[in-house]
Length: 223
Image (cartoon, rainbow, N blue to C red; front, side, top):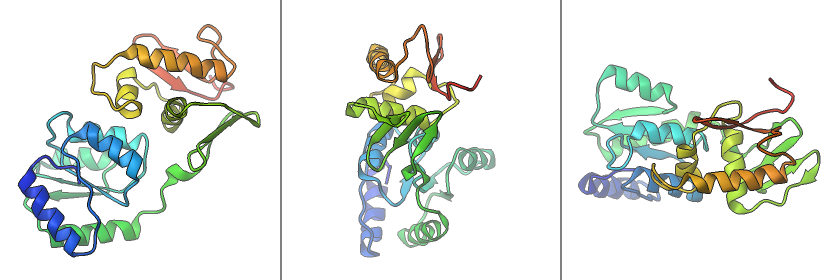
């Protein structure tokens, strides 16, 4: 549960635990992102009104790295907000106030219909293969010697392949640092990653920078 209201969190957690769930919690969006990536929960219950980042932005960031089912549980009941949230990747939308019994039913319904997480399947981009289960990346059949952060960076870009990803998003998703962190960290790791992919900033193949915007991972044979 990603919820900053301690009273709501305590009441709903108690009700869900009584119904057989194991509940982990986070009160901030960026803290929740790290927990979700590390703990790999079966489902996420997400409030939109968070103290450090809007829940809708967190949902978009989460969808870039995971297909975990997300139930948005919020006080926002505007129809356009509901549509935007579902279009951003939410599986369910519950308006406060809600009971633990109702949320339990929604969780069970979502888990029945949501397929196994596609994020576990290896990703193939040109001659590059990335397997999150084994945390192994290969290029043209040769294993890449990547550090943990280099692999996480490569995987995040692969999950958004063909899209330009900002350095701010990379800092939040890979390094779990709030917006405004040191972008030089990203630059250094991108340089190391380029070297291991057999390319450079002047002669890019997989990693393509867009000045002032960010970087994307793409098939070297694509335009």
